[in-house]
Length: 403
Image 1 (cartoon, rainbow, N blue to C red):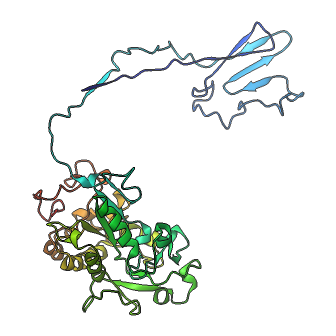
Image 2: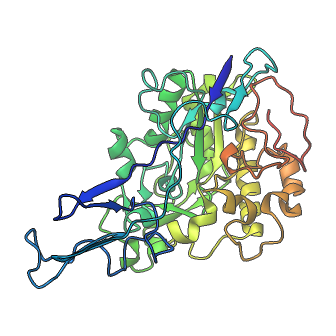
Image 3: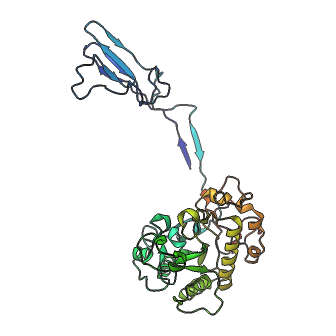
């Protein structure tokens, strides 16, 4: 199949205006061309900007009219006309010759499997209709940074007054009094539609303790103690079928175990169909969630959090992929948005690439990078991971390993 693209220049049109003398014509400069004496072509900020008349009848005190790019002065004896620069000969539509560009697309060569995760969405609406056939559904965003799976409370952060409330359950139309229902409902919809599910695990430090609303949580004295609970990677004890909402702590390994119990078939193939990402945009925490993380995140802090929470997840669901943190974009992947302890590119930094804890969990904690955020020529510019059963070839210090 050949697609042929041609560059065609449209003809320029010269505008004409009639003066009071029917035999006199004034050529006006097109708005995208510079008027005489105006090298910028900016039609503003000049005394020749449009009519100086006060209304449709004009100002009876003025002797002439002024038009952008053209000055026409009329008296009873003489007419003076000023035109813009000559635009040159017109180029008619058709074959412009050397401007032709030909692209040849061959769909029958260099064929290879691609990951179904390339086709994904951040919403799980209409998975059986307009969004049918997707390979991956992600539940993320700023609301998930302080999401408490035990009671479905979350904090809006800078998106809305740093308020604790039940926004997630109300928006999704689920019962927020059922533990984890915000995540369970979305996961069920994704799996039922044949897609895998990427669940966000909060690692920032605190999650919302209540759904009381009322605006900024900083109006409450000691709000970190009274309006939030710490998010903890591991629970030193047996997991409960229903979480203890009175212990003032939210355990994320217990969350994974709870989700595993809800969807056992999704966790016991060779590779689990539920994946986990470690929080949302930590490179922006000090802006989006400054009530719980007022200082910019550093390399050492994020590596430590990634290692701790990823290892806890893998101890519960060994065959689940831990995708690492989700960044807002290129500046986050390269320097964590100018982290205070930045030393070189974050993803190439030795503390990230060779951390012993990361090797112990098969390097899966390294982020899955959206292709649009990849620097050209990056060794990690591999797109999405291959389908299940495709063996990785890169080591820990290279690209992420998929299992």
